[in-house]
Image (cartoon, rainbow, N blue to C red; front, side, top):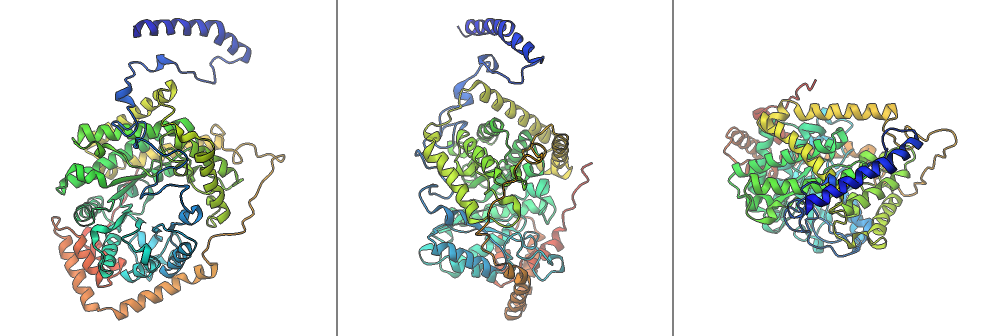
Length: 584
């Protein structure tokens, strides 16, 4: 019966091409149609249960949830957008200046009604394992995030979270990778000082070191040693802080660096597989380990359907990897839990005509819903993100209202996976999946992602893609409105009126480094330096034995108020530092 139907469709298609399409193209004076059309002929042997399935069920192509209440969309850590105070909740991702500055910011958000825990951004010296008084940190202290030198800094920030927002009642998130073990140790030490059992703590460290080697560049130690620290945090947290996610795997920075959809999918899932192997080598059960994995984002572009297909392919591929490669028995182990699905992120925004970024974000929000995600998850960032001045409250308001309009007014999310069975979307999903599998197979033949990164393979592939992208922009082949097209004198430059900027006082920004160095000096004078030296010595000895889990010796050093720089310097003495390979 199916063959008969296919033959009939093929006959009608040929007739359509000869009698309708070709005459139309002749009038347009083109040989090929600029618009592709897809039919059942492009979905040969389509098996619905194998390719799509039902929402919340293997292979999770449609959605990782079986149902979502219309008008509101789930968020990581619980709660729904539209059910709380949007502006104050949006402000949970923050961090700047000294710990006091960041504490005061979160206290202000709490006074406005926020019940969200912190999602901390760290400055560059902290991410690279240097103290604020290190000459290499000059000019960067407190700039891209908050400066953290010792446990005292952590204690100051969390003064904003007490009472009904005590740390066992909120989820904390930390955008930190190379020194993630230190931040996790600080949180555990903080909880114990407050008398809070570790098994009540919730949150997520990013802890995704492999993507740092591939794209972002905020690494410290050689890959082998960086992964050891990740392994040790996996084992410690799974056993002692069971409600804590142990990693948030991110492809966004790869997309920013120039990766294509197929590349980012292959590299993220290869990284994820490497992390699973790491946990298994540490003796963790696959059906326990996998439940602590989260994913942040696969990046984003303005290629609407491509991003939707990427999200669907990602869920399906990870489900296959977990069931077929790692033999997971629990169906939930096959779920790829991502904060964001299809999206238009920072990479899509422009400094030119910044208000246009709102249009780009709205399209990303719609793509996110259609791909099985949330409107706000795909909304990317406020329109003024690329201006480099901090998000204005007006920017956040427009951003959140756009997500609410998508969620509440359009009714677009009253149907789960409305594109399931689309001849085009299913074909595109298969195409992206096929391309990603091919890249992953190349990585496996090299010996896995660790060796591929050491050889510079993903770095080289991303650099090539970035080069091609930039060539297309400069030639005009890839059009970006207001940047390389529609820029003549008749166009109007609509500029935003920024009346409420970033809450960080510019004067504080200037003095943050001075204040932070003075505070660090005070801590170093007041602490028991003999105890600190003993802790660092024991950490050095532990680091020399690969079988020793380093979380406890790091935690011991943290509790003695050893600094991030001192701990990382100790580990550098044993591990050395990573030297990036030449990629060309």
